[in-house]
Length: 196
Image (spheres, rainbow, N blue to C red):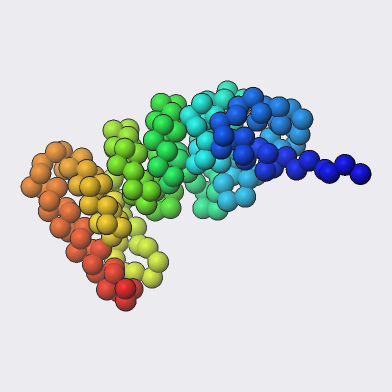
């Protein structure tokens, strides 16, 4: 008996290797795989946003995948998945499509994800696209709320914190420095509450 082909790893590898034709062939050969909910991601577009190229995203969108779809364990969008991996070309492609930027929770906020991936370029793209920098979130058991500047300071991404602070304060360096100082105070309060 011949070994049964397992299409899932073939598709993930083809996406990672930017083999559009191979993904097309696999979807045609295994049509049920196209609609699969990819564990921890959502659709194949979510997976490609994190692990593929902008060319792969363009092909998937042309194939009918929704760039605004909700996926992942917390309702993340493809742009959040791309930001979390620091994939600036993918973020740029999705922003050019006019995808909405969900800031309803910290985990869905692509700007917070760009901080975690330490991508200055992704942060810049999101700021230029008009992402709202004002939401404040409570993380974990902390009683402190933090905005994007404080989140960046908490994670040691001072360059990103400065960019966000300058953007949020209309380029005023004095106000940006004050926002960073406030963010650092918040980050230190959170750190002391958690005992780390």
